[in-house]
Length: 307
Ligand SMILES: C[S@@+](CC[C@H](N)C(=O)[O-])C[C@H]1O[C@@H](n2cnc3c(N)ncnc32)[C@H](O)[C@@H]1O
Image (cartoon, rainbow, N blue to C red; front, side):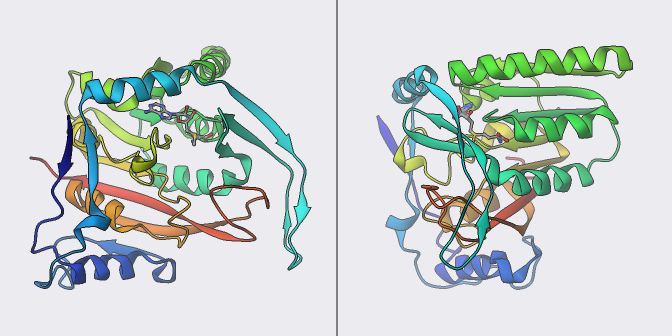
């Protein structure tokens, strides 16, 4: 059975979404959004429901999609640098392909760094519990590890794809070997499976300090919201002072802000969120971001709403 989550509360009108979008556009640079903000929200007209429709699936409906992604072949390919017609240079890099999909690329490294710096800025004191959803090329994992060395705690990585999971295990085993002689109280674990399912099955409540989600849409209608569909379970596992971040850019949202569905889901689950941007230069054959230059949203969500 496929259920359709009803579109937003009528009071959260089109004009309200417009306000949120303006606030999170890149030129705002740093927008603080909270329900206490006097510019939010206004009474007004009815939203365009079709553009806001979010399809939710039962675990049984989701199962074949998860199985498919789990078993897809994964490989990392290298590409050469080049020059755009306007003279902008892009560097050589590495790209993760799962099936035929471009899933991650080393040109995103500045975004990974800005995002990890941002979330750890909020959490200077350890020990911390960190959960990362989606290992990919392990770029963020390396940056998270660097931050965790001085803080200690537990760092869990959840990865679905068989091959990428194997790489993540190998990476974590090397990292644990590196940590051992330093006498740091830090444990890195890798779990295999669908991140939403694994978090849903976790018994413990309000234990996560930092939750970083960079997965991939398992099906077209998850585009842009694949990191947000499990937010109810995620926010109930986040501490009150816990923070959440995700990868918001996608082929239909290249503006450096959040799109309407993302705004709606984030607003529904957090009382405060900020969006800054960082610039990247995708290679000319990138399928999900058109160069020469792109601003990627660096999102920080705080104050999880409790049901
Ligand atoms: C964009 S990459 C992550 C990139 C990573 N942040 C990095 O720095 O390299 C997405 C990863 O999420 C994994 N993934 C996709 N859907 C998932 C899911 N539902 N649960 C767990 N992992 C998932 C993919 O197999 C892939 O390895």
